[in-house]
Image (cartoon, rainbow, N blue to C red):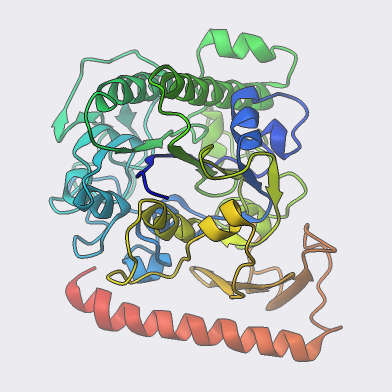
Length: 447
């Protein structure tokens, strides 16, 4: 690898494992993402590092477990909210130091206070919003009103390079994110520098908004599924437009593109926008158990793909358990940067996806409030796992063989007591070390 690739990371919001046609969905199709997957590697056991958005994004952009990056929970949306600590290097910072042009289009949700914004973490260009969600047409953040923070009336939340902009009122944000990314790529390719573009679509996070032209494509579906299909179809079109611009600029071959969702599908009743407490059923985790907020597979296993035509063979479907934190080291190694100077929990995937080399064995860990989870090979352990947030744990200890039972229907803890005890000890040891570091390093410094 001699030429530094351009790098594009797409991330969607609350998109379930089963909501792409290349991942098995049958009631609507996502042809552009299907084509992107076919051009490289599609992962069938890809994980977010958290079942909620801020920690998941922190892991993706730092190469660390969320607790090691200083972000363990959904961050507040008020304008004094701190977030990703400035001393934690981001992928944008690392690539900028290597001469890359860097840009973010879409959702940030890693802090609004000075020191926590995109420009403080290596992004030269930013167009999007700072909080966790906005209305797709007015670009107003409504969901902090009951948090008890002062000034939490509905807040406008659309920004360009640190300045609020009202120039796009009424524009559908998914299409606007695509438009800005395409325009940026068109300009960036004229310069003699590679570029890193982080395209963070807020779809299909609530509120469930889509223009009529997308809704009409799926008029045969029930409303909750119709609007999910419409929102993801707008994303799919956007990915297609961005890839087409790369082809027009003759840079597609040497552009590394990664796509994932930040966590599993949301069942939050506010998706409905009508005040009813009935959960939302529009998103699908496929065969998986659980949703957003849960450490069962449906909350953390997500659709993902990696394409780089110059180096990654197409048509691959790879089953190894991998995670968002692996993207930081993968991108840096693809760009010929040594990893020695970085604290990382992830690993470089290029030998695996480009050369077919075996991966080193490792445990993967997760934590969310009272839940802790571990994956080792085919085995998945969940301690105090919640199927639905706010409800009691399903069991103190749940053990499943995902090769035989990816839906985690059967608890094998009693059948394999020694393995259950071994994995439980490993998970608790990891969690205890994380909690100790959180106290000593992050809370001690005001995180």
